[in-house]
Image (cartoon, rainbow, N blue to C red; front, side, top):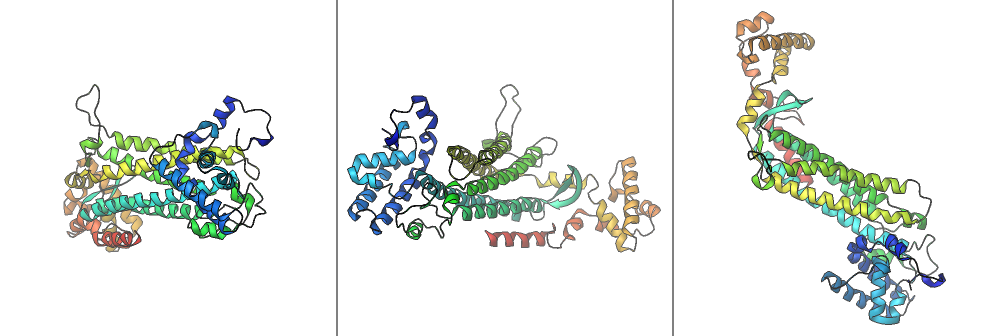
Length: 455
């Protein structure tokens, strides 16, 4: 008979058992469930709600189950429905009557809320650690390429020269924001719900603060209805994961482009590439492509949980069992992608000469040419028009701006002088952009230092 089966006159149908059961996926919570139960039993004994000897037997029994579960010696049973019922059933089998006292003063509703909060904060801390490793790798590579000039793009058209360091630091900034989002997700999960009961707390004199202390929670939930039905902290995690995956996907898109024959800015390591079953010359960036594809999967996990929660009245509803598969999948996908992306990034071979050549084409120094005229007293709008005409002239002649002789430049505007060629050089274009946030090497070096301090 089910542990809750006292009021039922017949067993549930086998189809219902299978449909209702969550042990196939929530068994990963056994550590969190056992840890929470140890804290609960300890408190029950301290409060005199159950005999101290029973509390000690329960704690010892739970620790034994944890050891066996860690060793893979326990076969979780579908007919026990979920990890919570499995643990309690095994405990009672092992220690007898005392095991039946474990559930005093709590419901599966606040029990699962506790387990998931412990798990969610662990996942948030894990994501921050993985992001820290990736950001550190980005900053290390950026420091090696402070003067590696490359074209910056808007609309995927060459715009202005920047450095590879500046480009990599843009992604470091995105990922730092992701770390902050996961810090928020951690804080959102870091509130202890046990004691909420099924929805209306309990008449037992529980010491909720003591349970929170034992489980390293700095605060307890202050409303029992919300305590059992809140899944916002999971949504916070999945939102952070979705934004993080979006950033990884953007980076992967660029690496896919950069590794193509058209760009040749970077070469993927063989260990993180694949071949073709028919075309022997192919080297495909499958890892980057798969991360890009898995981004939609994490978006789906967030959308799934949002949809589950959108129409639920207070307090707990069985619909909420659907939170776990979405959360687990989002976490698993994010961790795999962060891990493999970091490993892939560390093996990339960048090609500074090709990048510099790319920056030299496409008139990326046109804005600096216009700015030169401004320093000579020409209004920017007039300077913009003049340089636009120069670009048209260069297109006719199939040459660059700095290929035009000074006489031809002066034919478009008398303010041009020979110092314009230095002003338009790629080195000057980058180095003169030294205001905070710019691509000048020393400015980027300072930004890297600031990011390392945050890490």
